[in-house]
Image (tube, rainbow, N blue to C red):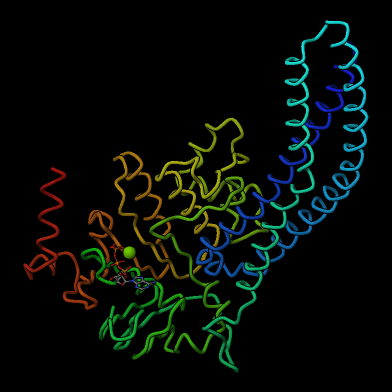
Length: 413
Ligand SMILES: Nc1ncnc2c1ncn2[C@@H]1O[C@H](COP(=O)(O)OP(=O)(O)OP(=O)(O)O)[C@@H](O)[C@H]1O
Ligand SMILES: [Mg+2]
């Protein structure tokens, strides 16, 4: 009976090795598709920070390592397959001879021996499928091809042939009779006019779906208005290079997008050369330093895929730190609709107040306390600005804004 372990041990060994290999290749395929997912979902954030080139490079590196691993796996399994077959054949021969001997001497019953043979064949099949493990890597590589195509595809919005740099400095923003629809015939903005002198704070309030975030999308040139013009310092934004336009805009968006990486990486996203001190300074100004220091790994804490390891309020403060570090003259704040606890809301609001100083700011607010002292408040409803003025002026007007305000301040008191 001592022959049995002699057959089983190599099988166990091979199965283990196979398990390790498939776990490895699964990990690689997973990493590639995770990266793919993240890039597609974070595309707006990547573009807003003009980081397309950096992402493409990072991805190329991931693919390269996946390729290398796939090659190694193929090599190993190619070697393993014949080895396995020889071993199994020898094992089968020995066990048949031994089995015959044992049965003849009444040590084993025929039933026991049949069960043993069946178990052996069952183990043989999964061991043989080792050559198939490369498949998952191939899937990942296919996904990579698709992504490269996507990143390389000609963008709809391009620089004008003689586009100029938008230089850092004071920025005034004007929207002139802007009309826009995502889907032809279904206008989202009609005849929108905004005048924001350099350094002013313009607030947007109004019901969900009114078109507020769309105003931001147009200013960042993710889309182009079908009619009308958007001007920065008196010139159409189409006249500036896309890169320089976006370099001058920092955005804290409605759904903060964090990349799988450390907290520090995410804060540095718009300024990769920033030092540790600069990162910390920005985090302090964003009221994020304190909670970051509570993690065992501090700034090296991984945020998880899409930042799922952080709370909504923490994610927002990281995004604010990111915007602070970018130090752009135009600031776009799209307040999250999700409710935050009063404590983190206060921390976020005080961080935002500091961030607005000296910048031309567009702020979308769901909590009116953020914008009471804005230079101008625009009520956006059904794609139109239906009321505009300071808080006092709009209260005096006694219209939609007054209604919103009454509801909110009654609720909170
Ligand atoms: N990419 C898109 N493609 C097609 N329609 C869109 C797209 N983005 C937004 N819309 C539509 O445009 C309208 C305005 O959307 P927008 O995101 O600007 O609203 P909002 O005022 O920011 O709302 P909320 O307060 O909920 O954030 C909505 O009807 C929305 O369904
Ligand atoms: Mg919105």
